[in-house]
Image (cartoon, rainbow, N blue to C red):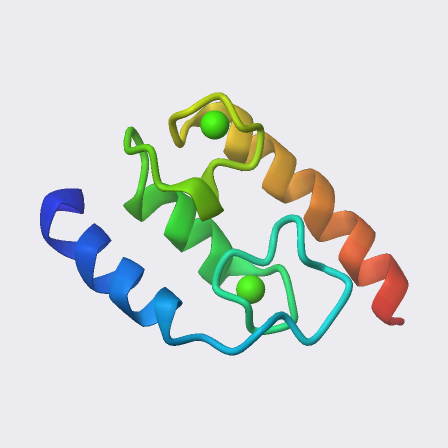
Length: 81
Ligand SMILES: [Ca+2]
Ligand SMILES: [Ca+2]
């Protein structure tokens, strides 16, 4: 499933505008917030070297990136309220 979805998501991410918020670290789809859609990107690119979802910079998207995304999620919500 990732084989078909990942290239399509990568294409649309290339068209995305610059990040509008300080939540850059985990805002994979650049919509200004860190939420379930960013988790979906991590899962869609799981096991691939997609750089924007590779938050821990180990060269592959995996559990470490999901953990960091959840960590950033919390920080982002605190800053927005
Ligand atoms: Ca986002
Ligand atoms: Ca990684």
